[in-house]
Amino acid sequence: MQLLLDEGSFEEIGMLVAHRCKDFGMEQESYLGDGVITGYGTVNGRLTYVFSQDFTVFGGSLSETHAEKICKLMDLAVQNGAPLIGLNDSGGARIQEGVVSLGGYADIFHRNVKASGVIPQLSAIMGPCAGGAVYSPAITDFILMVEKTSYMFVTGPNVVKTVTHEEVTSEELGGATTHASKSGVTHFAMANEVECIEYVKKLLSYMPQNCEEAAPQWEYEMGDEVRSALNTIVPESANQPYDMKEVIEQVVDADSFLEVHKQYAENIIVGFARIGGRSIGVVANQPACLAGVLDIEASKKAARFVRFCDAFNIPLLVLVDVPGFLPGTDQEWHGIITNGAKLLYALSEATVPKITVITRKAYGGAYDVMNSKHIGADLNFAWPNAEIAVMGAKGAAEIIFKKEISEAADREAKWKEKEQEYLDKFANPYGAAARGFIDEVILPEQTRLKLIKAYAMLENKQVASPKRKHGNIPL
Image 1 (cartoon, rainbow, N blue to C red):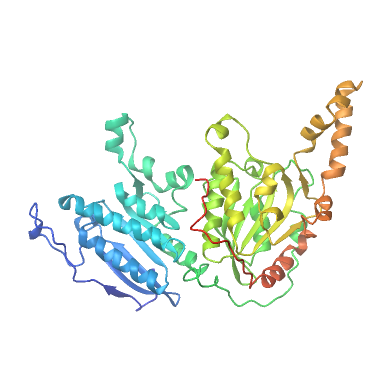
Image 2 (tube, rainbow, N blue to C red; image 1 turned 135 degrees about the vertical axis):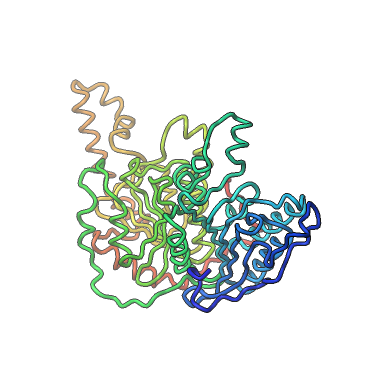
């Protein structure tokens, strides 16, 4: 609490609350607060509500009164439009109270859902989080875990061994590294608790207090916004990889990029940054990993992030270098169609300012999905070497000129000739620009300046959405 909140700002609520259980000798053990500290304070001067479970009291287990304290805090956070931070360190339900403790979990879950998209909700897992306890963090916006200290799982190693005969440790089953790189459950895997709290504070700095406020804007004075380094980052060869993070670092304000889900689905990058002092959300293909292709994990990762940004009025920047969707039976059998549609849906649904920059390739359906003009992007820029086409030149030439190639005396030479013909026609952004799909072809070094001006222009964007209960995203 002291690390998270501004000095002297914390006010505790429910300090004298104690459990009501009379069974199994529990009436002889009673501790003030009942294993959870709840209250409010400020983080960098902004109102924030916090609860922190205390593992030293009944293992941080959730009782009826423990749940009531958290629920009361959640209600206050929603009513007053301020973020809610949970510091989770609990062994699960207090079994001495039976179904009452399960009801307490459900009360919390219900409030998590009601608060979703209304106030930012962050969960820092500081120790164990098992069984039903995992579902509250899962509903919140961001999860942070501590390496070798915290773990999350529905069923623990002992149950797994009994049911499936698998030998697995708590760290392997549900540790920070596992959930950061394999399952994608956690957005951040921190080295220690101090770093974890610092990242909570960093995250909050990019977010508004609630869905009715604009994203934070820092003071910024325009200077020389030309970034010549952008002219040389993308290689001349369309098949040579490069690190899109270098592009991001040049485009956004210095040291402002905070990557989310860094170790999961590395072929797409998501994170928060600032441009001209404005908070933005960045979604970018990563050519350095799987050529930046879209797959199931990348689509889910990006869609979730886009929806958070849209819920909290954070403008979006989409950087595109995508050869398409990843082919193969594994992707098809595991649902690349519906999972890929999640990103398409999220970007189409978003009403915040949306700007796209195509740095190199934009092929096939992935071109449409990555915030194209057709699905509602406000401004679409392209660099001069951008390629916007249905597919790569080699494959396209084989299909379009199949007969000519097969009848040629030198098939390989004819194939290369037709490949070059296709490249000459489509390996540039000007055809798309002529149709209005690209608003401007810009020099890479101009990108930052163009974006600063564009976001300022879109600052008061408003979209009237049709009346409905809610959309039906392909989950």
